[in-house]
Length: 158
Image (tube, rainbow, N blue to C red; front, side):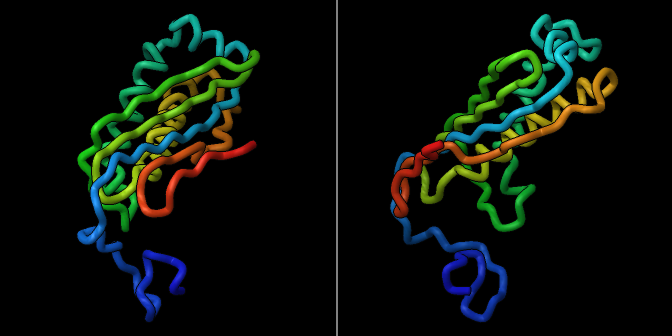
Protein backbone atom coordinates (compact mmCIF):
# COMPACT_ATOMS: atom_id res chain seq x y z
CA UNK A 1 0.00 0.00 0.00
CA UNK A 2 3.03 2.28 -0.21
CA UNK A 3 1.59 4.18 -3.20
CA UNK A 4 -1.46 5.24 -1.19
CA UNK A 5 -0.44 8.17 0.98
CA UNK A 6 -3.31 7.78 3.45
CA UNK A 7 -2.05 4.37 4.64
CA UNK A 8 1.16 3.59 6.46
CA UNK A 9 3.39 0.64 5.55
CA UNK A 10 1.27 -1.65 7.76
CA UNK A 11 -1.99 -0.63 6.07
CA UNK A 12 -3.27 1.59 8.86
CA UNK A 13 -5.12 4.80 7.97
CA UNK A 14 -3.30 8.05 8.59
CA UNK A 15 -3.49 11.72 7.87
CA UNK A 16 -0.56 12.72 5.67
CA UNK A 17 2.05 14.77 7.53
CA UNK A 18 2.46 18.01 5.55
CA UNK A 19 4.67 19.81 8.07
CA UNK A 20 7.84 19.37 5.98
CA UNK A 21 6.22 20.55 2.73
CA UNK A 22 6.87 24.02 1.42
CA UNK A 23 3.96 26.42 1.24
CA UNK A 24 2.96 27.43 -2.26
CA UNK A 25 0.01 28.81 -4.16
CA UNK A 26 -2.32 25.92 -5.01
CA UNK A 27 -5.51 25.96 -7.02
CA UNK A 28 -8.02 23.31 -8.06
CA UNK A 29 -10.97 23.48 -10.44
CA UNK A 30 -13.70 20.84 -10.46
CA UNK A 31 -16.95 20.50 -12.37
CA UNK A 32 -20.19 18.57 -12.35
CA UNK A 33 -23.58 18.57 -14.00
CA UNK A 34 -27.22 18.33 -13.01
CA UNK A 35 -29.48 16.95 -15.73
CA UNK A 36 -33.16 17.80 -15.40
CA UNK A 37 -36.40 18.33 -17.26
CA UNK A 38 -36.30 21.41 -19.54
CA UNK A 39 -39.11 23.03 -17.53
CA UNK A 40 -37.04 22.69 -14.35
CA UNK A 41 -34.02 24.29 -15.98
CA UNK A 42 -36.24 27.13 -17.15
CA UNK A 43 -37.50 27.70 -13.59
CA UNK A 44 -33.89 28.00 -12.43
CA UNK A 45 -32.95 30.26 -15.32
CA UNK A 46 -35.94 32.53 -14.67
CA UNK A 47 -35.20 32.54 -10.91
CA UNK A 48 -38.81 31.44 -10.45
CA UNK A 49 -38.42 28.40 -8.18
CA UNK A 50 -40.79 28.43 -5.20
CA UNK A 51 -37.91 27.98 -2.72
CA UNK A 52 -35.99 30.99 -4.06
CA UNK A 53 -32.95 31.70 -6.22
CA UNK A 54 -31.59 28.20 -6.75
CA UNK A 55 -28.20 29.26 -8.12
CA UNK A 56 -27.40 31.71 -5.33
CA UNK A 57 -28.34 29.22 -2.63
CA UNK A 58 -26.28 26.52 -4.40
CA UNK A 59 -23.34 28.93 -4.71
CA UNK A 60 -23.39 29.64 -0.96
CA UNK A 61 -23.76 25.92 -0.15
CA UNK A 62 -20.76 25.11 -2.35
CA UNK A 63 -18.59 27.77 -0.74
CA UNK A 64 -19.59 26.60 2.73
CA UNK A 65 -18.86 22.99 1.77
CA UNK A 66 -15.38 23.86 0.46
CA UNK A 67 -14.60 25.49 3.82
CA UNK A 68 -15.80 22.41 5.74
CA UNK A 69 -14.28 19.64 3.64
CA UNK A 70 -11.87 18.68 6.43
CA UNK A 71 -14.90 17.93 8.63
CA UNK A 72 -16.62 15.81 5.97
CA UNK A 73 -13.81 13.72 4.44
CA UNK A 74 -12.06 11.74 7.22
CA UNK A 75 -8.40 12.21 6.26
CA UNK A 76 -8.55 15.68 4.69
CA UNK A 77 -6.73 18.48 6.44
CA UNK A 78 -8.81 21.41 7.67
CA UNK A 79 -7.53 24.23 5.48
CA UNK A 80 -7.58 28.04 5.63
CA UNK A 81 -8.94 28.49 2.11
CA UNK A 82 -8.02 31.79 0.45
CA UNK A 83 -10.79 31.73 -2.16
CA UNK A 84 -13.73 29.59 -3.25
CA UNK A 85 -15.87 30.52 -6.25
CA UNK A 86 -18.70 28.71 -8.02
CA UNK A 87 -19.98 29.38 -11.51
CA UNK A 88 -22.97 27.98 -13.35
CA UNK A 89 -23.73 27.54 -17.04
CA UNK A 90 -26.87 26.41 -18.83
CA UNK A 91 -26.00 23.85 -21.51
CA UNK A 92 -28.77 22.89 -23.85
CA UNK A 93 -32.33 22.64 -22.62
CA UNK A 94 -31.77 20.18 -19.76
CA UNK A 95 -28.28 20.57 -18.28
CA UNK A 96 -26.83 22.82 -15.60
CA UNK A 97 -23.02 22.82 -15.40
CA UNK A 98 -21.38 23.68 -12.08
CA UNK A 99 -17.74 24.67 -11.73
CA UNK A 100 -15.83 25.39 -8.52
CA UNK A 101 -12.40 26.97 -8.19
CA UNK A 102 -10.62 26.90 -4.84
CA UNK A 103 -7.29 28.54 -3.94
CA UNK A 104 -4.94 28.41 -0.99
CA UNK A 105 -1.40 29.36 -0.10
CA UNK A 106 -0.47 26.30 1.87
CA UNK A 107 1.20 22.90 2.21
CA UNK A 108 -1.47 20.73 0.61
CA UNK A 109 -3.78 20.95 -2.37
CA UNK A 110 -7.45 21.84 -2.55
CA UNK A 111 -8.72 19.22 -5.00
CA UNK A 112 -11.07 17.72 -2.42
CA UNK A 113 -12.39 21.15 -1.51
CA UNK A 114 -13.25 21.92 -5.15
CA UNK A 115 -14.87 18.50 -5.63
CA UNK A 116 -16.85 18.88 -2.40
CA UNK A 117 -18.02 22.35 -3.42
CA UNK A 118 -19.38 21.03 -6.73
CA UNK A 119 -21.00 18.03 -5.06
CA UNK A 120 -22.81 20.03 -2.40
CA UNK A 121 -23.87 22.71 -4.89
CA UNK A 122 -25.37 19.96 -7.11
CA UNK A 123 -27.14 18.40 -4.13
CA UNK A 124 -28.53 21.81 -3.22
CA UNK A 125 -29.93 22.26 -6.73
CA UNK A 126 -31.56 18.85 -6.38
CA UNK A 127 -32.98 19.69 -2.96
CA UNK A 128 -34.43 23.00 -4.09
CA UNK A 129 -36.03 21.53 -7.23
CA UNK A 130 -37.03 18.01 -6.18
CA UNK A 131 -40.64 19.03 -5.61
CA UNK A 132 -41.03 19.71 -9.34
CA UNK A 133 -38.54 17.19 -10.80
CA UNK A 134 -37.59 13.96 -9.05
CA UNK A 135 -35.89 12.68 -12.23
CA UNK A 136 -32.86 14.98 -11.90
CA UNK A 137 -29.47 13.28 -12.03
CA UNK A 138 -26.12 14.50 -10.76
CA UNK A 139 -23.40 13.58 -13.24
CA UNK A 140 -19.69 13.78 -14.03
CA UNK A 141 -18.26 15.30 -10.88
CA UNK A 142 -14.56 15.47 -11.60
CA UNK A 143 -11.31 17.35 -11.17
CA UNK A 144 -10.62 19.53 -14.22
CA UNK A 145 -7.25 20.94 -13.25
CA UNK A 146 -4.94 21.68 -10.36
CA UNK A 147 -1.75 23.68 -9.95
CA UNK A 148 0.90 23.85 -7.27
CA UNK A 149 2.47 21.24 -5.09
CA UNK A 150 5.04 18.51 -5.47
CA UNK A 151 3.16 16.49 -8.08
CA UNK A 152 2.93 19.50 -10.39
CA UNK A 153 0.09 20.66 -12.59
CA UNK A 154 -2.75 18.47 -13.87
CA UNK A 155 -5.21 19.38 -16.60
CA UNK A 156 -7.92 17.05 -17.89
CA UNK A 157 -7.51 16.61 -21.62
CA UNK A 158 -10.98 15.45 -22.72
